[in-house]
Amino acid sequence: MQSYTEENYLKTIYHLAEKTTNVQTNAIAEQMQTKPASVTDMIKKLADKGLVDYIKYQGVTLTEIGKNTAIDIVRKHRLWEVFLVDKLNFKWDEVHDVAEELEHIKSIELIERLDEFLGFPKADPHGDPIPDKNGRFAKTQFIKLIELKIGDHGTITGVTQHSSAFLKHLEKLGLTLGKKIQISDVTDFDGSVEILLSGKQINISREVAKHILISSNGKN
Amino acid sequence: MQSYTEENYLKTIYHLAEKTTNVQTNAIAEQMQTKPASVTDMIKKLADKGLVDYIKYQGVTLTEIGKNTAIDIVRKHRLWEVFLVDKLNFKWDEVHDVAEELEHIKSIELIERLDEFLGFPKADPHGDPIPDKNGRFAKTQFIKLIELKIGDHGTITGVTQHSSAFLKHLEKLGLTLGKKIQISDVTDFDGSVEILLSGKQINISREVAKHILISSNGKN
DNA sequence: AAAAATTTTTAGATTTACCTAAAAATAAAA
DNA sequence: TTTTATTTTTAGGTAAATCTAAAAATTTTT
Image 1 (cartoon, each protein chain N blue to C red):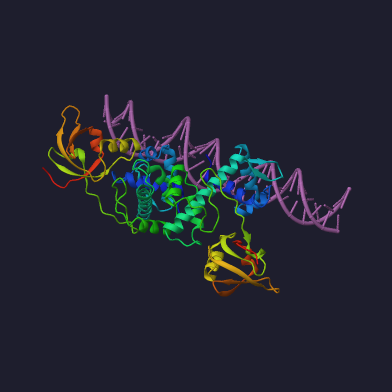
Image 2: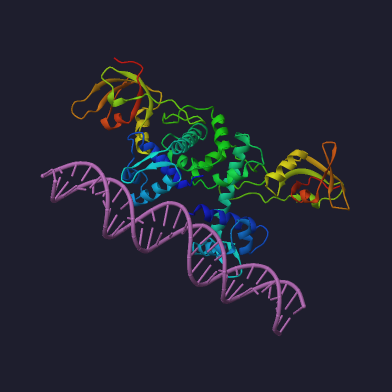
């Protein structure tokens, strides 16, 4: 059994490991709003418990057990987000912090029943895939909006930024999950992207375009 | 803002205060499965925070703020129990431990929306009243089954014991909330009670009878 | 490849919630 | 009203998770 804090470390390492193989101490510290010295302490503890492989100065990787534990926390987090949005009418930009707490509730029975109650959803309100009870989930093969070329079209299926500010901004622009878009122009000056959204032309910054995921149902 | 542990102390003191005015150190320790010395430490901390009034060797009472905080935790606990039973099909003997964790989730918005989602229930699955968002709830004027006389009848509306063993036992006997019963006999030998439940005679021990609450809709 | 910069670790403290053992206060019994 | 028993507190210590400051290892730059 892991503590609340250990679970948070595992989850953070799991997410960071999506980008780099060996996760660095400083990266964990930044993500967790703590100090590198504290991270080193915790890493040693997790290594002792067999949850991470750790070589001094070389960063960490999750062991099989560590990874499964992390995926289980991610599963809980995303299921609770679905609950909050689908059943309690929270907006997609309001759920993160509460789910951050709910994900640590320990009952397995609770999560299985919640999953069933929600109809075994495959994705959370931000489009992120929900692992099943065995930890399996489809690798998302989505492309970043910024990588599309003029004329390409597709459907918004996810975001890579969960901050309330970003999500509210998308909502205001009408860029929510499931919306179909087409790239009409890319500005040379600042790299901002002109897109066609249900008949209307809208302009989004390069920074915004970087964090929108598209299931590209057709090239130009 | 209180810690998880502080909240548990406040809740425990609140429940113990239903029986005695000044709650004793040992009583808290026993209830919380901890040692009296630890309780003294925590009491001092709660007193410093203005949540309890404390005079050395004289036990504690909750201040207005402390009481409101406690009631809020009770509210959360009971609403989550309703959720678990009504929405996730848990049985009434399975919900206590999970609710014990869920009650500490901090979002006010969450609880208000949950309350609404559940249809503003007035009682939890064990018949205990759920405080509204202002902390107000009807004082339950129920009588213990053991206090009824032969011929008295009424409806089961609560229990004063939440252990799984006790609740499962009641379930097996068919003594669930809402059931109408009548006292047909009280055994001299061991004080066990003979009751009439939907046409059938059943016998329950004195110990069981002590923990069943009846809304007495009529004396003999 | 030596110097400089960055990253990571160690050493030593702090805070929270506990504990044990012993002392002090209160309550009950002789 | 002493003595005895019970309850409560104090004193001193532990483990978890954090911190700062300084040392060590690694990486980058010159």
